[in-house]
Length: 173
Image (cartoon, rainbow, N blue to C red; front, top):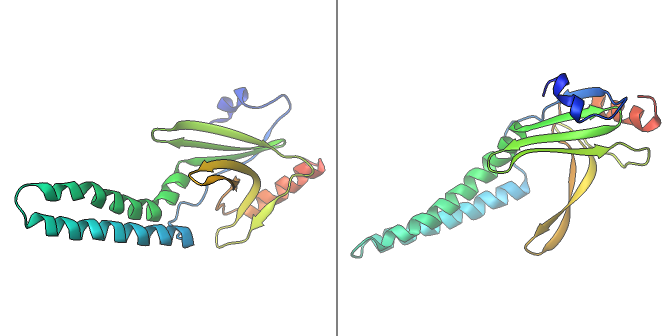
């Protein structure tokens, strides 16, 4: 988004301090590895079932294609999904707020803003590619609701961005 495009989103006196994008390298955590293993077993069982069903007459074995596709999709999304989501995400920090923009297929464009206040808790995750978390969102799942941390994930210049956020919190920005 160009500077001219930001005019309708910024308040009077609000200025852009930093803009960036998350690292798009593939990264697998415990959750992703678990989902890939589950998807592999799901697809493997469907493949085994299709082979066994193909020995019979007719096309009954084709009903396994749906299950095989679901299992293969779980494996692919667990490996490539995070990188795909990050590739379609943009970050902006102003002297008052943090913005996270995304443009996902089907969902479309989204722009969320989070005010930077003096008492806002900031979590700095010092990983290979650091992240700065500054908010939570409540997500609804099949077993109720849970909080998901929100912030600038996997940004190369995280120390500099954290310094900007601290200055904003102190009123020095």
